Amino acid sequence: MAKKPNNVTPWEVTGEIDYNNLIDRFGTKHLTAETLQRMEEHARGSHFMLRRGVFYSHRDMDAILDHFDSGGDFALYTGRGPSGPVHIGHLVPWIFTKHLQDVYGCKLIFQFTDDEKMLIREDYDAEDTWHWVYENALDLMALGFDPGKTEFIVDMKHSSKLFPIALKVAKRITWSTMRAVFGFGEESNLGIIFFPTMQIAPCFYESERRGEPVPCLIPAGIDQDPYWRLTRDTATKLGYPKPAQIHNRMLPGLTGDAKMSSSQPETAIYTVDAPEAVEKKLLEAFTPADRDNCPLFLFHYFLLTESDVEVDELHQECTVNGKSCTECKNELVEHVNRFLEAHRRRRKLMKSRVERMLE
Ligand code: TYM
Image 1 (cartoon, protein in one colour):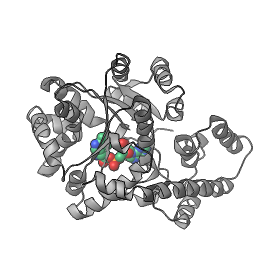
Image 2: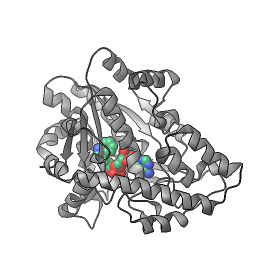
Image 3: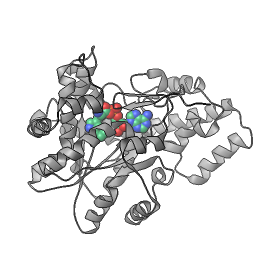
């Protein structure tokens, strides 16, 4: 059967995604066995998201590893557009980022693009986005990041940290490039046309702050790649190190969509969903004939079940032993609710810490 056309941009992911094709289209590279082995040696073990190809693509990962091997330091950079509650798909890149912080001992710069969400959402103003910055920051810190090595940059509050860099970036990028990369048109508002320079700026923030070149590595979903394609040319023009990236696949939505998405509540399990809401959503979830791409199996594969033996057993029970979808869904309800309960306990403990970090 022909695949539905797909569209992968920072603001929209639709259709069936051909992840290999994205590597060609975006000009990134597959993570090779050699690169994975180097990362395993540093970590003294393999991370399940690397083993399973959840993180599957990169740019300049080897350059970052070479830099580390020769005693150099680098920064991690990732972020969140605070438009609503965090869903479990968002946790995928963040759990892996925490692993990278543990292994490489590096600083994380975490950006909250409240400006982006205010510019895109007709119904949002600065107060709405601030509420979600705080709520989303609790989810992030509940994953165990080292607060002493994590810096939040909230665009509207900390604009003076980014604006001078964003201006330098903006001066080097033309309107025709912006239109080609992001699909902007006559109807796009002026703010959103400037916004990408604010998401690019943190790539160079640590170099500016320390007054010396500090490479950065961006762990994030492949949907964010358009920013980094633009950044690389600009970095060279401005004399900063080119940022490296490592990309994850997107956790699909419960309704069979290519991506679990905060703007489509029916596709998502939020970290703050009550147990009854989780039960209702999972029992109503779409289960396709193609079991390898069943969103419920992918919950285990991407996030919930780290043991390969257990994940294989789950696959076998479904494909060989004929376990029913209802049974599988009921078990998943228990598993997700246990996971979320533990997450919410850790989230609560982070309140005063997060308040200080956002000052
Ligand atoms: P946002 O808030 O849409 O997404 C935050 C991060 O979560 C990833 N993501 C997913 N990963 C797996 N499965 C999913 N279903 C899924 N949905 C979202 C995204 O790829 C992203 O890594 N503009 C950005 C915020 C931002 C940012 C950054 C992101 C600012 N600076 C640097 C990454 C790196 C945004 O709105 O992300």
